[in-house]
Image 1 (tube, helix red, strand yellow):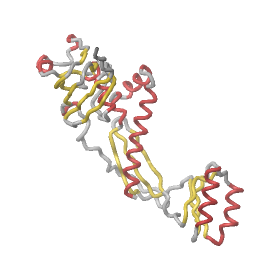
Image 2: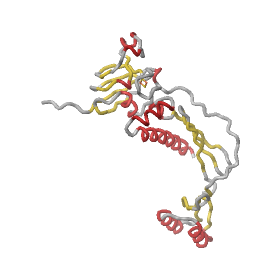
Image 3: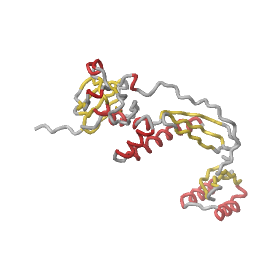
Amino acid sequence: MSEEKSEVTITIQPYGKRIKVPKGIDLLEAIRRAGIVIRSVCGGMGKCGKCKVILKSGQVDFQYNPEEKLLTPEELDRKVILACISRCLSDCEIFIPPETRIEGQRIQTDAAIPKISPEPIVEKIFIPKEALIVEIQRIRQQYSVTEFLSSKLEEIVKRSTEGVTVTISKQDKRLMDVEEGNTKNRLFGLAVDIGTTKIVSYLVDLTNGNRLSVASEYNAQIAYGEDVVSRISYAMESKDGLGMLQKAVVDTINLLVEEMAKKH
Ligand code: FES
């Protein structure tokens, strides 16, 4: 007797992506899990008609009410379905049409940002080799130092030929990091503008306020609704919805940080 499959494979075109998902999951969730963001204004409530995809092959349970008139008869003939109300019943291949994709629109990042004189709450202090014993003792007395940083400090001090640079937080009086050599001039800050649609981040040189790099990306929360109200509904009504939304925004910021860090 053949065992019923508990997982199905979804092939997503034109990206050529394949993903295994639990059988019965809706296509919008499968697309999200594949890391693709599509339009979903209502956040997957089956109300906006924006998450259109074309079913090329396979079987889905499409729970569509024609009275809602979200699709035209012509679209239904072309096997256009709404991803959020289509549960995957077998291996499927779908095509995401251009109007459903969120890409190719230019993200504006060239806003005029006034030059600022930063007053960072962190400071880097270079301690030359000859002053290490006295200065390290002072740091230990004046700042809180975790066990991890304490051993790192000892280790770096032992092997350092030139001296060490310590990063301290002036706000809560704690040691934040220790580096070998003089890295005093490499003090960076990150400014992040989190918008409903896009996230723009700036890497700033905190020693002089110069903007070193800018990176932008669509806010991955779009996959859970294009407006704030839809996202709030998603957070309230879905199991771990809030966690998913938080992860989406953090993932986007991490992506931007990684992109900018590679350049500096
Ligand atoms: S109808 Fe599917 S996201 Fe709105």
